[in-house]
Image (cartoon, rainbow, N blue to C red; front, top):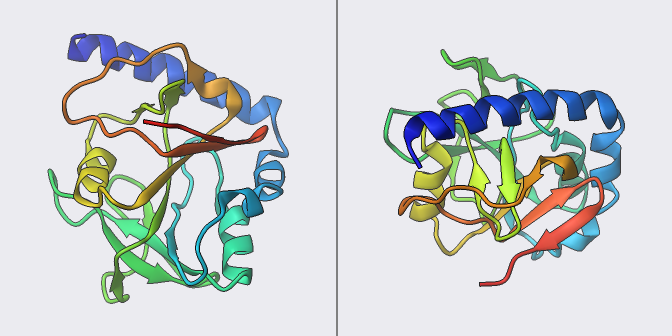
Length: 186
C-alpha cells in the first residue's frame, strides 16, 4: 500500500474517531471499569498519554492504576526518528506543550522504562495492528521495548477489517475499548 493510501486511511479514521467521541461521551468511565482486566503486575510502571485531537482518553484508567499503586509515566518526543522517552508523572503535575501540540512531562522529570504502555491510535484491526499518525514514534518505541506490554486504547468503532502492514509495524498485545479488553495472540 502506498503512503498516499495510508494517508487516506488516516484521514478517514480520524474523522470516524471524532464521530465516536460524540457517540460515546462516557468512554473514559466505561474503560475505567475494566482496569482489573488489564492484569498488570504489582509495581509495574505504566505509561499512558495525554489525549489530544479526539484520542480515546486513558486518564481515568491511569488514575485507577495509580490508586492501585502503579507508578505512571508519560511519553516525551526527544527527537525525530527516535523512540519516545518516558518520564515519571504523577496526577496533578504540570505538563508542557510540545511543538506538535502534545502535552508532555517536563524534561527534568525522572526518565523511566515502562512495563506497560497505553497507546493511542487512529484504527486497529483484528490481529492487533494499529494505524498511527505516520511519524513512527510508537512503532520505534514498541520495537525498542519489544518485551513490554502494549495496550491500545480505542473506541470499539475504530476497529477495521485489516490494516496495511509494513516491516516496521509492531502489533499490540491488547486493545481496551468501552466494550472491554481484547487480547491478541501470536
